Image (cartoon, rainbow, N blue to C red):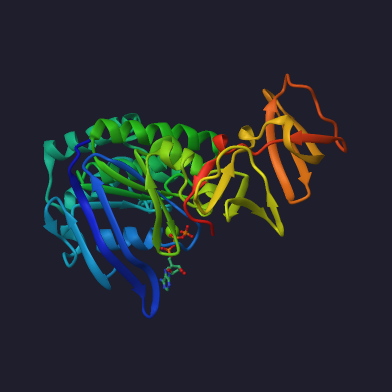
Length: 341
Ligand SMILES: Nc1ncnc2c1ncn2[C@@H]1O[C@H](COP(=O)(O)OP(=O)(O)OP(=O)(O)O)[C@@H](O)[C@H]1O
Ligand SMILES: [Mg+2]
């Protein structure tokens, strides 16, 4: 992956008629990067991809690819591949002919065509299925045909919109690894949409968290996972104890809570259940739920200010349901949120 920006969105604004969908979106993607777009339904992920692919007109702003302004360039001249959730393979054609389709349209024939298609099928591990009709393939295999069909076109950018969402859990995991391998081997710049934070964290070089047509945070998986900038992102990546800060104190409902450590000047603090120590500390609550989770035990604690979730080693002494327990919300173990809400 190079350090230079390859695809740039500059104050991109998109709308469906009078309904705004994306506003002033700035994004710089490096060559060879695998970028994940993460965010709730309706936040503008597909719309952004459609605009990059040239499938919708731009209301404002600019798209540049490889040093060239492509904002107004026709879709078929952009050298951008887009794979949708329903991969729209041709059911009457063989795997080979599905992959060959776009190349033939470009005028490729004979040996070159055969070699290119076979190369693509090899990359996705489907060479022995070349002669099969696509309806006779599994969901994961069909997915790989769609991937090969896009890859052989050698797009400058390959975009995948929820490519794994209609696969079962096991196949999904397999395809996830496959996608990562194909991307690293081919070096193609890839943008993929997912609503699954675990998938985004596992696959991407960087994650873009979108909210309401704008970017809430961009960062590496580690940054997003450990340092969410807002309660919105924290919630999205599994922080279960999220509180606003006011006048140097933590606030929950109508109560101000004392936490241990120096309280930073920030919008809020968030703790994963793992970061909440049980058995000692300045706070007390009643155990309302205990569940065994193999290596750990998960507790739901009812405190005067609300529910707190804690997770401790399974080997630690058990606090039974209904008992009073001391706990802490240590600032040292919290993610500091710049924004709350
Ligand atoms: N064809 C359309 N006509 C009008 N509004 C649309 C159209 N397509 C999408 N929208 C609106 O634009 C906004 C962004 O939609 P978009 O499809 O980009 O969301 P998304 O992030 O891809 O969501 P999902 O995760 O559900 O696929 C939404 O408010 C949506 O209702
Ligand atoms: Mg979508």
